[in-house]
Length: 370
Image: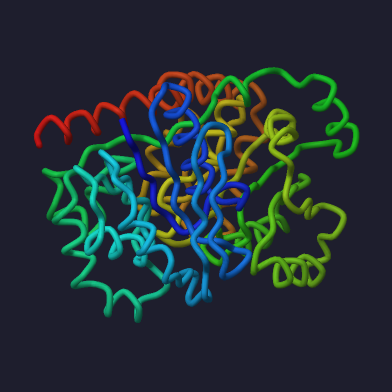
């Protein structure tokens, strides 16, 4: 099968969708499919073509980036040049979606609806008519969780055309014990240890977690970089938390499992619906870490089963967030039970082979209908 994935960025650019695209395309290529990933080139105007882990990667020349959207004239041209069986779009990326709508030559189109557009409301108002056409014309819409189909104003009217395909990860990579590395981290950061990993963006809710740390006797490790880094560092200084909140920067993929395994709790305190799923939750679960998340009406509370794999707190509420963290840290037996339940759920529902089989099954269904 000839498969064309279209999005704005791909690995080694870091991000949840970028990682998901990387894993999925590589796994499809390993199964013998002809896989091309079409994205934009963060280095500038040149269009490059490479083969990476069996996947053909086209990075179309990028003119500029406006409101997190790379602009590219080369990407529509490259879209028209391809002759795939299946075009798989990762939403949201308007340039890619409209390019495929107008110029795509695939036999079928599947769109992974990763998240509503939340912050760029002005742009969404302009894009809304085209977006609705894009969604109606897609042969199948993939949603990562049942709650997102029910809560998204764009997906709910098209629920009959949606298939829930949870994003998956390589569970074994995060589950394999890293005893020496974990011991080193525990020596470096003794006492109860909390972990956050992700891009430091507004919707991650880290300002509320930092505020909650005033009421929690623990150490917080923040892994990742992003536009909120300076504000968060300043907040930590204002709160006098420098000795208990540590900024690690981007953690290498090879080192991530040890951090998850060393943590007593993984906390994702997201504040807005832009947090549609939370791949880091899967990684933490696979490593056996219990979770504390927030109720956003998205996939995060479907991944983290309240009272089983962790606790779910209200968003933007530092006091209640602190209470949830303290409650679990005070009960080591419950922490261990939740960590085991989290790892079991990751293996049963979110392992990468399950994702690949489910996605390929949707492709076959679309092509057979044609």
